Amino acid sequence: MIFIKKNKIISFLVSGNGSNFKAVAEKIKSGIINGKTGIVISSSRDALALKKSEELGIKSLIINPEHYTSKKEYEEDMIKTLKNFKTDLIIAAGYMRILSPDFIKHFKNRIINIHPSLLPSFPGKSAQQQALDSGVRITGCTSHFIDEGTDTGPIIMQASVSIEYEDNIETLSAKILNEEHKILADSVRFFCEDKLVIINKKVKIKK
Ligand code: GRF
Image (cartoon, rainbow, N blue to C red; front, side, top):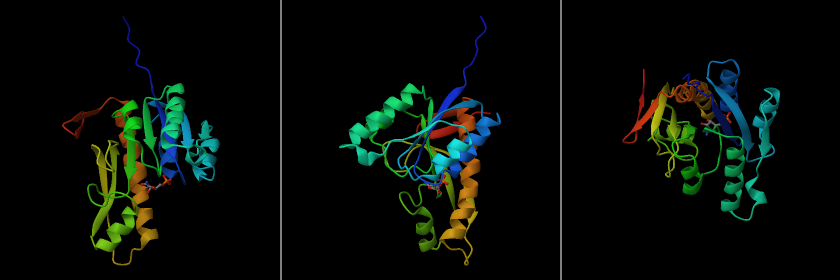
């Protein structure tokens, strides 16, 4: 019997500019990532990510949490939509909301986040500013699976950037973002090639 492996369907949660979404979506389009795009869900109608998805010809929709009376109802709608699109992997690509344990349960070890620091340093908001304020000389970015904690899930890849005395929030964020695009796309590629194995909260990348 011939076993044909199906391409994984990748959906995105976005809130803002969408440069990480674009970096991954372009690699899916060009075949570097062996997957298919599902749906882009934006939490805001003003997200520039929506324009980028239109330019790339990828379906998107707005699910605005402010239009729901509870987080539960909001997330139920997202879960339904993601499942309707047969999503195998969710990328939180600049998605600025915390997902509930119930949401995560539906997609266990199938949600990847990109965070602009070398976790476990500087979790949560304003990671770049936290790094600048602390005086560290090296920071970077981390791609990781989302678990129930804030930025605590199994780490897939990290990349470092150095902080120069002259750096400010704009220059540092730009340097980090450049690295984010690379490690997020590589992490998604490895996931689609079934190369990521989680063992005791650590991620092994199979050769
Ligand atoms: C990135 O720095 C990401 O790490 C953080 O928010 C920023 C979003 O950038 N969570 P973009 O929307 O992907 O351009």
